[in-house]
Image 1 (cartoon, rainbow, N blue to C red):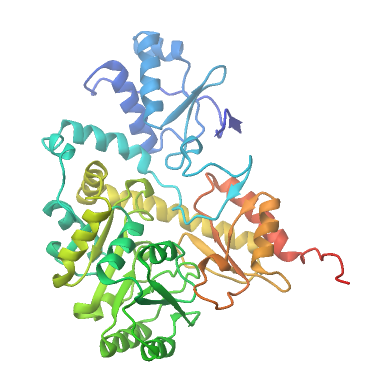
Image 2 (image 1 turned 135 degrees about the vertical axis):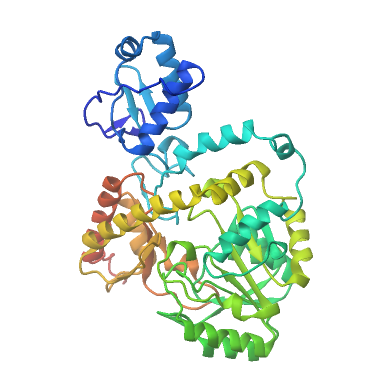
Length: 473
């Protein structure tokens, strides 16, 4: 139930009494640490109500003020929420409505328009990472200017992360960026000049369009099918005139979810090599997917570039990504980083690298993957016989609208009913007529209950024909 804007899942008051005997530090801090540990271990679940201040103070032999400070510390860490007259409740880790990425357009809106990762347990690891950094020897250095493209240690962590999805790049060929969107900007800036032509799938990640416009680059949308970009369309584009690069998303394509088969990847790489066309591979979703073919960029030699980040797998707010390219282009990529932000934020970079090094990133990824699988099962159950494309572990589905629905009309009607999704029009490049389909992102609703409510509205809408307008005389 909602309490002061928070989704609180009330069960019963928890008879919870932590053992503080083995914990060091101020008593209030040990109480907060015990809450964090018990949330992580599942002894405290979302919606559990913590004991009243006086009861816990009496049980632990401490003052009410000490317990109050402990609860306050846990609230600052995003673990609990205290409300006067209602008590203190355990929050679901991860996404929090009071810290939403953007405000809702209207009260009660269920937003499924952004490819937000499914909720995970990253929030419970965050305070630990900050304390470790504050107590560590490198804290002061994080306040200094950093090398463009990342420190050697940070680039080594990036190299290891890239290797998980088959991108083999030594640290000296890895450039750290402020997320994948920044990585796209950096790569296009390093590769292109105003007026250059860059090919993409006819439906592609819409974030590349403003970057291309800013750089004066022309995008050429190429035909695709259910497996991704068509090699014949790419071959024809290479013959039509000067083409500087191809930007593509072979793994978990955005927005269609397509995974490009290996034979097609090889065919596209062969065409690109024959015509001397650089390939920029957006690999941001690959770490989420159960099937991982060899990346196209690994078939391209000195013409291959790859972009990825931790946003979809670990935490969007870290804004840490990695780009790799030919050795001869690394200095240009670093210069593009310097020109746009000097360097990725050192503090979030250090958190990300710590998590990659100590295994925390794997824990967070597992928690997100588990939630994504559960949410996809829910979506499949609600949609029933509707036609849609989906991939296990992915963050969205591609719903093909039944006749006579048109994508923009469906999106508008869904918004009127309180659900926000994205029309195929937003992803279209050039004048190609986009299909009658919408992208539905199921990671952003803060709970499965809210996701189910939104999906029920969309399923009912898809099953009903749109209202016809007045006759045209």
